[in-house]
Image (cartoon, rainbow, N blue to C red; front, side, top):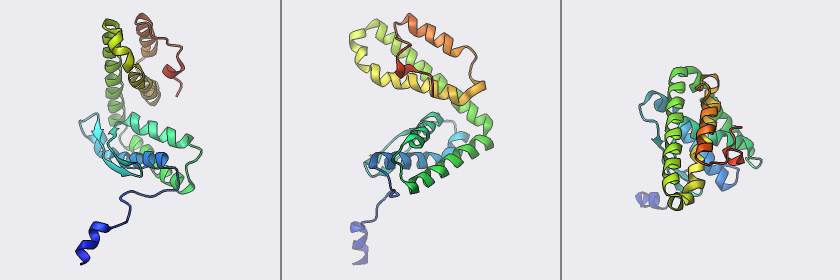
Length: 189
Protein backbone atom coordinates (compact mmCIF):
# COMPACT_ATOMS: atom_id res chain seq x y z
CA UNK A 1 0.00 0.00 0.00
CA UNK A 2 3.01 2.36 0.11
CA UNK A 3 2.40 3.32 -3.54
CA UNK A 4 -1.02 4.62 -2.49
CA UNK A 5 0.54 7.01 0.03
CA UNK A 6 1.88 9.10 -2.86
CA UNK A 7 -1.66 10.00 -3.85
CA UNK A 8 -2.36 11.44 -0.43
CA UNK A 9 0.93 13.14 0.24
CA UNK A 10 0.17 16.21 2.30
CA UNK A 11 3.53 17.86 1.70
CA UNK A 12 3.24 21.20 -0.02
CA UNK A 13 4.54 21.43 -3.63
CA UNK A 14 5.92 24.91 -2.89
CA UNK A 15 8.21 26.38 -0.28
CA UNK A 16 6.15 27.45 2.66
CA UNK A 17 7.16 30.80 3.99
CA UNK A 18 6.28 33.17 6.76
CA UNK A 19 4.51 35.81 4.67
CA UNK A 20 0.94 36.39 3.49
CA UNK A 21 -0.06 34.13 0.56
CA UNK A 22 0.18 36.87 -2.11
CA UNK A 23 3.75 37.78 -1.09
CA UNK A 24 4.70 34.13 -0.67
CA UNK A 25 3.43 33.44 -4.19
CA UNK A 26 5.33 36.38 -5.62
CA UNK A 27 8.50 35.21 -3.88
CA UNK A 28 8.07 31.71 -5.31
CA UNK A 29 7.76 33.26 -8.79
CA UNK A 30 10.90 35.34 -8.21
CA UNK A 31 12.82 32.28 -7.01
CA UNK A 32 11.77 30.30 -10.08
CA UNK A 33 12.83 33.14 -12.37
CA UNK A 34 16.14 33.57 -10.55
CA UNK A 35 16.85 29.85 -10.85
CA UNK A 36 16.53 30.14 -14.65
CA UNK A 37 18.25 33.48 -15.17
CA UNK A 38 21.46 32.02 -16.61
CA UNK A 39 19.63 29.97 -19.24
CA UNK A 40 17.35 32.91 -19.90
CA UNK A 41 20.24 35.30 -20.54
CA UNK A 42 21.99 32.83 -22.82
CA UNK A 43 18.82 31.87 -24.68
CA UNK A 44 17.08 33.59 -27.58
CA UNK A 45 13.59 34.04 -26.15
CA UNK A 46 12.63 37.38 -24.67
CA UNK A 47 9.63 36.06 -22.74
CA UNK A 48 10.21 32.81 -20.87
CA UNK A 49 7.16 30.98 -19.54
CA UNK A 50 7.49 29.92 -15.90
CA UNK A 51 5.05 27.55 -14.17
CA UNK A 52 5.03 27.45 -10.37
CA UNK A 53 2.81 26.06 -7.65
CA UNK A 54 2.05 28.67 -5.02
CA UNK A 55 -0.22 29.00 -1.98
CA UNK A 56 -2.68 30.71 -4.35
CA UNK A 57 -2.56 27.95 -6.95
CA UNK A 58 -0.66 27.38 -10.17
CA UNK A 59 0.78 30.52 -11.72
CA UNK A 60 2.26 31.02 -15.17
CA UNK A 61 4.15 34.31 -15.21
CA UNK A 62 6.26 35.31 -18.16
CA UNK A 63 9.85 35.93 -17.19
CA UNK A 64 11.82 38.92 -18.38
CA UNK A 65 14.50 40.81 -16.55
CA UNK A 66 11.99 43.59 -15.96
CA UNK A 67 9.37 41.24 -14.53
CA UNK A 68 11.91 39.67 -12.17
CA UNK A 69 13.17 43.10 -11.07
CA UNK A 70 9.59 44.28 -10.60
CA UNK A 71 8.99 41.39 -8.19
CA UNK A 72 12.24 42.04 -6.34
CA UNK A 73 11.33 45.71 -5.85
CA UNK A 74 7.82 44.85 -4.69
CA UNK A 75 9.08 42.26 -2.22
CA UNK A 76 11.77 44.62 -0.91
CA UNK A 77 9.09 47.22 -0.21
CA UNK A 78 6.68 44.78 1.43
CA UNK A 79 6.42 45.50 5.14
CA UNK A 80 4.86 42.13 5.96
CA UNK A 81 7.47 39.91 4.32
CA UNK A 82 8.50 37.47 7.04
CA UNK A 83 12.10 37.07 8.24
CA UNK A 84 12.63 33.68 6.57
CA UNK A 85 11.18 35.02 3.33
CA UNK A 86 13.47 38.04 3.57
CA UNK A 87 16.39 35.60 3.65
CA UNK A 88 15.00 33.84 0.57
CA UNK A 89 14.63 37.22 -1.14
CA UNK A 90 18.29 37.97 -0.36
CA UNK A 91 19.24 34.82 -2.27
CA UNK A 92 17.20 36.03 -5.27
CA UNK A 93 18.89 39.45 -5.05
CA UNK A 94 22.33 37.82 -4.96
CA UNK A 95 21.50 35.69 -8.00
CA UNK A 96 20.36 38.87 -9.81
CA UNK A 97 23.62 40.69 -8.96
CA UNK A 98 25.74 37.69 -9.94
CA UNK A 99 23.98 37.23 -13.27
CA UNK A 100 24.33 40.94 -14.01
CA UNK A 101 28.08 40.82 -13.38
CA UNK A 102 28.71 37.47 -15.11
CA UNK A 103 26.61 38.25 -18.22
CA UNK A 104 26.73 42.05 -18.61
CA UNK A 105 26.39 42.07 -22.41
CA UNK A 106 23.55 39.56 -22.45
CA UNK A 107 21.87 41.51 -19.66
CA UNK A 108 21.94 44.75 -21.67
CA UNK A 109 20.80 43.02 -24.87
CA UNK A 110 17.81 41.43 -23.14
CA UNK A 111 16.88 44.72 -21.50
CA UNK A 112 17.05 46.56 -24.84
CA UNK A 113 14.85 43.92 -26.47
CA UNK A 114 12.41 44.12 -23.59
CA UNK A 115 12.31 47.91 -23.86
CA UNK A 116 11.71 47.67 -27.59
CA UNK A 117 8.87 45.18 -27.04
CA UNK A 118 7.11 47.37 -24.48
CA UNK A 119 7.50 50.46 -26.63
CA UNK A 120 6.06 48.68 -29.67
CA UNK A 121 3.13 47.35 -27.64
CA UNK A 122 2.41 50.79 -26.19
CA UNK A 123 2.59 52.48 -29.59
CA UNK A 124 0.34 49.84 -31.16
CA UNK A 125 -2.18 50.27 -28.38
CA UNK A 126 -2.18 54.09 -28.72
CA UNK A 127 -2.57 53.79 -32.52
CA UNK A 128 -5.55 51.44 -32.10
CA UNK A 129 -7.10 53.58 -29.38
CA UNK A 130 -6.84 56.68 -31.57
CA UNK A 131 -8.75 54.89 -34.36
CA UNK A 132 -11.46 53.36 -32.15
CA UNK A 133 -11.49 54.88 -28.64
CA UNK A 134 -14.71 53.14 -27.57
CA UNK A 135 -13.19 49.74 -28.30
CA UNK A 136 -9.76 50.41 -26.77
CA UNK A 137 -10.38 52.69 -23.77
CA UNK A 138 -11.39 49.75 -21.62
CA UNK A 139 -7.93 48.22 -22.18
CA UNK A 140 -6.12 51.31 -20.91
CA UNK A 141 -5.44 50.05 -17.35
CA UNK A 142 -3.91 46.82 -18.65
CA UNK A 143 -1.91 48.57 -21.36
CA UNK A 144 -0.68 51.12 -18.88
CA UNK A 145 1.32 48.32 -17.29
CA UNK A 146 3.45 48.07 -20.45
CA UNK A 147 4.05 51.79 -20.22
CA UNK A 148 5.08 51.52 -16.58
CA UNK A 149 7.52 48.79 -17.51
CA UNK A 150 9.18 51.13 -20.02
CA UNK A 151 10.27 53.29 -17.08
CA UNK A 152 11.39 50.26 -15.10
CA UNK A 153 13.53 48.88 -17.93
CA UNK A 154 14.98 52.33 -18.63
CA UNK A 155 16.04 52.58 -15.01
CA UNK A 156 17.73 49.17 -15.29
CA UNK A 157 19.55 50.25 -18.43
CA UNK A 158 20.76 53.43 -16.75
CA UNK A 159 23.45 55.09 -18.85
CA UNK A 160 22.97 52.41 -21.53
CA UNK A 161 19.42 53.64 -22.20
CA UNK A 162 18.80 55.34 -25.55
CA UNK A 163 19.52 59.05 -25.13
CA UNK A 164 16.44 61.27 -25.38
CA UNK A 165 14.00 58.35 -25.46
CA UNK A 166 11.82 59.63 -22.63
CA UNK A 167 11.47 63.08 -24.21
CA UNK A 168 10.50 61.49 -27.51
CA UNK A 169 8.08 59.12 -25.79
CA UNK A 170 6.39 61.88 -23.80
CA UNK A 171 6.03 64.01 -26.94
CA UNK A 172 4.54 61.03 -28.78
CA UNK A 173 2.13 60.40 -25.89
CA UNK A 174 1.00 64.04 -25.84
CA UNK A 175 0.22 63.75 -29.56
CA UNK A 176 -2.10 60.87 -28.65
CA UNK A 177 -3.71 62.75 -25.78
CA UNK A 178 -2.13 60.71 -23.01
CA UNK A 179 -1.88 62.61 -19.74
CA UNK A 180 1.85 62.29 -19.07
CA UNK A 181 1.38 63.84 -15.64
CA UNK A 182 -0.64 60.74 -14.62
CA UNK A 183 1.27 59.28 -11.66
CA UNK A 184 0.69 55.78 -13.09
CA UNK A 185 2.95 56.79 -15.99
CA UNK A 186 5.64 58.13 -13.70
CA UNK A 187 9.16 57.17 -14.68
CA UNK A 188 10.36 57.33 -11.10
CA UNK A 189 11.14 53.77 -10.17
